[in-house]
Length: 62
Image (cartoon, rainbow, N blue to C red; front, top):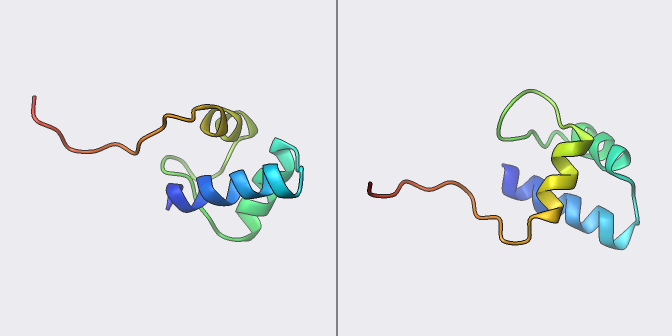
């Protein structure tokens, strides 16, 4: 679900030039939930979009 949020947030930021707060509002209205917690936070969106090398958590051998 967060991958959908990441893709949608990137689209809103690049194409529509929305602020992080506006992106949070759109994600909430569209029902896209963050991986942790109940709601998006503008700082979470900023960090998520700033981290270009983001990879979702995976199970790995220790």
